[in-house]
Image (cartoon, rainbow, N blue to C red; front, top):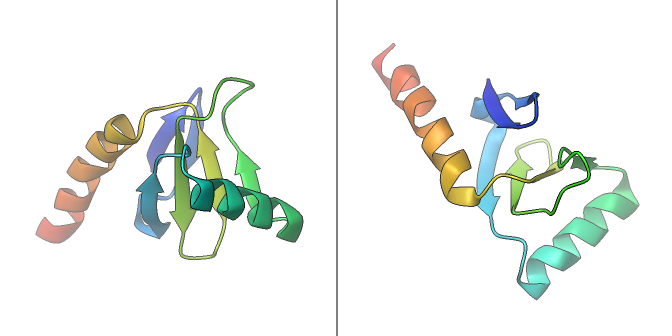
Length: 83
């Protein structure tokens, strides 16, 4: 499980990408996911700092920086490779 902030967890193996939300394509991705009902807001009312895209086409908003989320997912990926 991957902690995306404020007690929210995501299955780490389902995450395809972790991106920054500032660019126009990421804003469009967020809007499209919202219109399809595939947007999950895990920011707890705080500013969105990273967007996680899953293999099920869900888009998850997080208030944690992309670098921090990547650092949290890296040890789990290494564990999976060893097993």
